[in-house]
Length: 183
Ligand code: XMP
Ligand code: MG
Image (cartoon, rainbow, N blue to C red):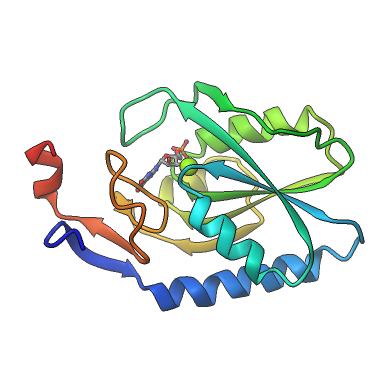
């Protein structure tokens, strides 16, 4: 699949599986408050992580999705965010965990945290599969992090380049020829 487009595999399918189980166990240990957790997945990138995470989680959780778009180029964000699809329900009084695919500059997440906090959830935490180095410098509280990765553009397991490669079961880097050939 996608022959020759992937320069290297950064995180294998098995490594993802193990990490998802580990994160789910951590979250389960931390939330023993009773009552369903509410997972908020950020479309589209987090969809694979969200569905695997929810199934690995030993306790019941409700699933909500939100789609946002940050203005900027296709490979970086500006922090100016627009809601494309809002949550279907009120989150007031709920224990909410935002499920993210990747945090890069942290601008999108910082906006999202502010937006959701204003809706008065009982608690609000973030679980991200991937985090890039720049994110560490921004003051965004991220409780659960799967992998800290180098500052490279990655695809697979929900992450895309021009809407492709989301369906890869692993996370890899793209061969530079993909950026330059303009598929
Ligand atoms: P910020 O910079 O606001 O951006 O934290 C987060 C969003 O930017 C996208 N993003 C990526 N998408 N491969 C991708 O496919 C990457 O390496 C990458 N880095 C950032 C992504 O949409 C994420 O939610
Ligand atoms: Mg995203």
